[in-house]
Image (cartoon, rainbow, N blue to C red; front, side, top):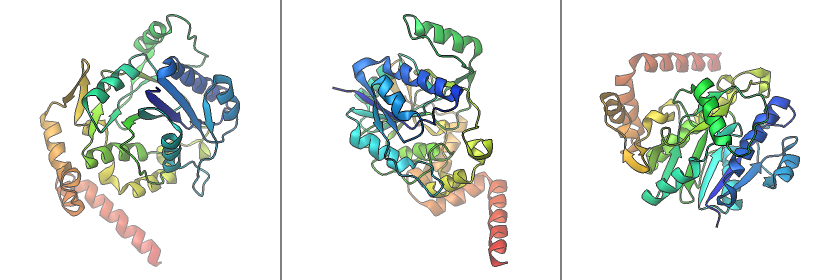
Length: 309
């Protein structure tokens, strides 16, 4: 039986560098053999040919927003309905997986019923087709050690969860900021274990530019990012990896250590994730971050004035 369904939404395979790193990523996933199945979701140019080449399932019928951007809700529904794995995993198509990925997912599944596994990545500039012959793991590990840069713990590039979780995902725009942070919030809000696996799982992000996005702008500067955050419920629900309540240590899922910084963050989000009391959460946030709230109020008042004029 398939253990893990990996589903992803590749960019068009028209840019030679993007095509190379996406093909590298897919090949790294297929190294797990029968334990993993791979689904490519979307109808971008070159996707069908790539799916056929690698012998993976292609699902072109994805819903899109008014800008033509695929919707996360549709992607996750297709992954759930089509995938046969015990666990589901959405992953960005520029991410290389190492052999530790599936074993750690099995360890978490054995210890938790409902959970979300997430983690930091290593950024590496890779321009060539990778060699996946014997010893590829060691070669890639050396490359990460020599040239890798640890990415800040903002969001996550992969999300592993059981079928009991994330049955309903809002209509976020994929490839824009905000929706991955909502995934972290949702896990905490629902009382599922949010498992930070950065020390147990090594994932490698292959650097690329933003030429595939409108105006070549980074995704966090696009209007769809602001819309994602609005759909998520606002900035209060933009969680980071620091908000995880569990981590994997030597194969064991343990509670995150309670440092002073972690303690005060847990106090801050307690009204939201435990009491589900949004107004109280806003008041607590205002106490913690008065300058931010002041700026938000000013921006809101300016927007109202513009609408009236």
